[in-house]
Length: 428
Ligand SMILES: Cc1cc2nc3c(=O)[nH]c(=O)nc-3n(C[C@H](O)[C@H](O)[C@H](O)COP(=O)(O)OP(=O)(O)OC[C@H]3O[C@@H](n4cnc5c(N)ncnc54)[C@H](O)[C@@H]3O)c2cc1C
Image (cartoon, rainbow, N blue to C red; front, side, top):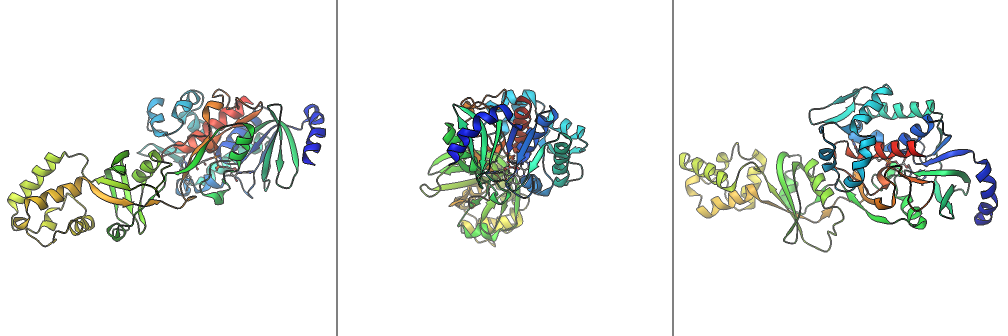
């Protein structure tokens, strides 16, 4: 039925199409693309399946929305923050990068501020201001936004896209379609991975979606005991069986289920896609990454020499946080009340080992959907990086997290959404 209707309507539409561009998904990428295309005078229809636009923008950065990162002056350094997609983004950032993002928002009357670590936020610390800026720009660019429009499929014939079908079977025609449906994280925001199936049907390769920027589950009771404790500037190494598969420095937070925090997010990003059911995973923490083993041994021996009668627990002061040193000694079975003179050479080595290679057993990551971003998505080789148009289907464009691009925390994911959206919107 739909097939016949499409066939009958198609030729009529090709002469009388109402929209120059249909954008699917009113997230960061879709809003940016719609505005750019609208500002160029194109007739744009933005279809959003939710009741509101930008639900992920609103929760981004803890409600403050970390729109980009201004720590790096060189693009090559900025790109180090993308475990997937950096090569593709290289050329794109020469057209629209983090400085362009800041300028774009400032020129649309949103004042921004850069924090010490380089993260950029609206000066009001309110993500609603970012969304309102985008919605106002949509209005000015005469973008037509329709909510509660759940797109079911793309209409493609002879390797050209010519419209979309909604879940309620309504068909809307357009010569250009931009898919910006996001990934699969925080699915309540509307990103449920709908577009992967359309991509495969259209002949695109889709790299399997997997959670990234997420926490690790650990069965170790001592980890749960440390709930609420944060550590900064430690080195984290993840092992699969006995092979190191990821290493990074950063902070972490102990919780009642395991560990999370910026450093852990990076490790989960570098190791995205592991099958935690089939292998043994172990995370090792180096609590003193700035010291060599020799430095630490000398430091402790010096303390030992001058404080023979002091309790071992007290002598770890300044080296290890209060709650942590207790757990470490309990872990290795050393009585915290022992004096240093009672500590054997073997026990001293055990303490050093624990400070430099503290073992955490890992049984998996947080339940799927709770991750901050999706790794995987539309294969980048099949997208023209000058335009974001598909190399397979004429008139079909892709932008945002739906692509096989993802970054670390710090504004990098929104930056790739702004960039890919901006380029698509200026290319259609
Ligand atoms: C808790 C959290 C905090 C974050 N904080 C930050 C941060 O501070 N800085 C940063 O850089 N990144 C952050 N991110 C990541 C960042 O928000 C996303 O990478 C980015 O918003 C993705 O934008 P997008 O436009 O590609 O997709 P989305 O924002 O996911 O938008 C996709 C839109 O498409 C719509 N849609 C989906 N399917 C259909 C369909 N079939 N029909 C019609 N519409 C459809 C959805 O409803 C949704 O509105 C955070 C993510 C989370 C979950």
